[in-house]
Image (tube, rainbow, N blue to C red):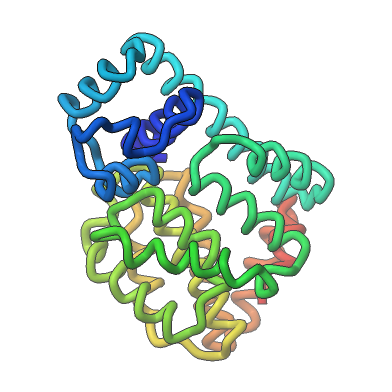
Length: 271
């Protein structure tokens, strides 16, 4: 979660505690349209404007910073639990975490992630309400350079099944153009997200029996930093590469390796 996203969510929480509209809260310091995007993590507020808004609403800077840290910590903990429950295929725990997140003032990104994870585990992703699908897809047109926005990378990563292959190819081409030959220079979190998007793209190519940029997905994964924590992406990339090339001996050997190392649940989702 980006720092600007944390600030936006904490501002929104403070505003709602005061019972104020966005117009009332900002007192003309910045425009309502700009501030609306600050709350959604789409715009970054300057330090001077932030301090002015806090001051005019009589919000202590120390209290705000403490709430900022507390919000971030809780969101991170919930997201980790959500991911762990997903890989354990624990529907009951996912439902409990989902209910906690949806009823809270947590970020739009976390709420969309919870919706996507719950729908995925229930195999109802494609049956999501059209308004939810619009909220997800709309994000890619509201954010400049979405490929550099951790928030949007995470949402795209979790929602790729909602896009048809033409849309996926279009977005993946943007991703490839930005990260090609320089991916290893980005943060570990960014590399992990891009690697996951590449694997999800390959899975969608398998499901849709098409996909223009498979070779580019292989290339991006090969650009990841050569560290053990990112090594699994290369293993899974090779699995898909051998599968698409009908090299059954090699992809079955990878499949066996994964099962032998306790990843049977993950293997069930491979072609």
